[in-house]
Image (cartoon, rainbow, N blue to C red; front, top):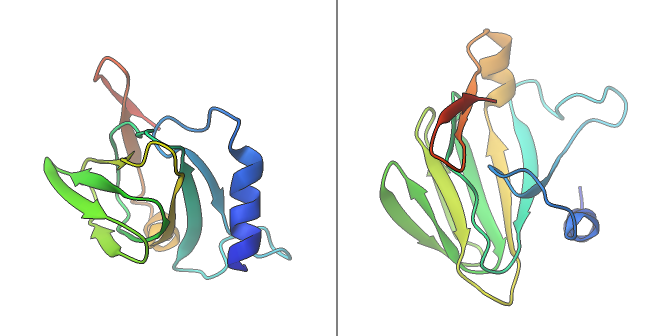
Length: 139
């Protein structure tokens, strides 16, 4: 999963609306099995266009993020965490969070690693998001 390939895939999705809670994103899969590359970890990347923000989201997996491009912040349970290229931060499981790309003319790209496959295997995975009117919905 070369960086250039990841950025190329995200660029092809740039014009599409994307998911309101995650922006435009790719999840890495084993090309032979079409499952997560490892039995206990999921890998992915997401793109937020300049000035774009995601809606609040939470799930029962913990996620580590590495910022590859752009500048912005992630709000986790009401606390703001600023980020820029090569910054690393973690969103613990079950906490509401959303990302904001503070760069008006520049895309933000977040690389992520989560324990979602492990949580799914033990039957404990669920996800929720907030709608535009702040209602909580199952995802």
